[in-house]
Length: 264
Image: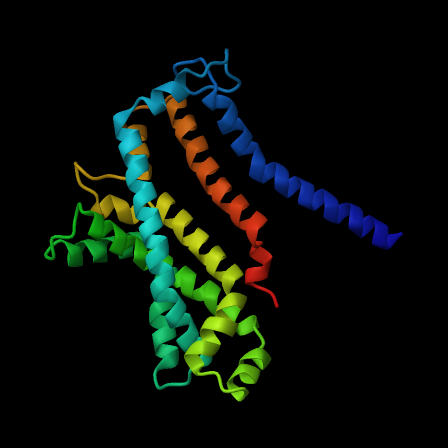
């Protein structure tokens, strides 16, 4: 009897969490189809007018293009730098390893606005403000710790029996990594790359310090628009950001599964 009661309470708790999480999202989606000229719920009518306005807005479309390009580049660079770093931190023994790990993971605990201000003070003299290079490097500061952390977890969960067997049979360390370790890392690689892309695409605080009048990202354009006015166009943009993130997550989950990146 007690077990059944606990199961019922557990299910009710999970159901309540889903309601709390998804109700605001459902309201945003409903408002995005509103025929009103202001934010209201429930809408007095339904229309696709605001979706058409978003697609016809050059600022938003340019911001979307910039965000997508930067996200792809940042995700690739995060993997390029993060994979060797994670391998060294997990598999190799060298002086200062813990210090290096703490330095790489430090941006995870620092306030984003502090990072943004520090990056601006460094980038301004180097003329990296309002440039693709500057935005990519700034986003990399945020995404690289996540990539290293995920790949560290994946590597730590991998058994080394296959690696030892390969080296016993004469394989070099490089060949062992490429032919034995790397295939087992695919779920972690895909998951970390996807998360890096999502983080870069949605980043706004650091981007506000780096963007300029001729180079902006979609989240920054949304922030600027909301600062000037509030209408259902904001809800459409929110749905757009949610949809892009959700599509990336679903693709990863259907292809390799996020759980495989963190389990044996």
